[in-house]
Length: 207
Image (tube, rainbow, N blue to C red; front, side, top):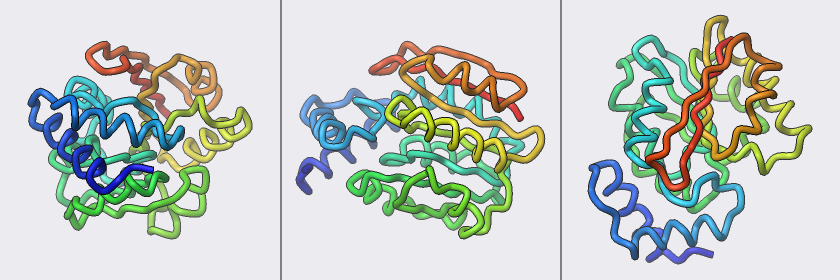
C-alpha cells in the first residue's frame, strides 16, 4: 500500500505535469507505486499535458453543461476541465481507488461533485447526484480490466445517460474498445497521442 509520503510525492508529480514542468524521478516513482498497488488504475504515469490537451479538445467543453468523469484519478483531467468549463456547468467525478480519490478532495469548485465508488453503478449514481442526463461522459478507466459482460453493460448505461447528440470520450492504451463503441454509438472518432507514457488512443463516440 502507498504511504502518505509517496502519496504526497505523487500529488507533486501531478502538479508539475499540470504546469508543464519536468517530473522528478522520485515523484514519478510514487505514482508507479500507486499503479502497482491497484490494477484498476489505468495508466502507469499521470496524463501528460499533450494527452490532457487532446482530451479537452474532444470534450467540446464550450457546449457542455452536465459532465460525468469515470476514473478521475488524481484529477489531472478534472482540474484542467474545470478551468475551461462554463460557470453553470456541473461535474460528477468518480474514482474507485481510495488513495487517488484523496487527491480529488483538494479540488475546491462548487461545480464539482466527487465520489469514491465504482462507475459500473453509474445508472444508480447519476440520479443520486442529480444527473438526469449528460452532455459529455469521459473516461480514463481501463476497460481492458473489466469483464466482457461489464464492458457491454457500462457502455450501454453510458449511452443511455447521454443526451441525444452527446458524446463519450475514452482515453485508452489499446484499441480493443473500438468495435464495442460502434455497437452503442452512431459515430466513433479515433486519435492517437504518442506524447504520453504509455501512448494513448482517444476515442470520441457520438450518440
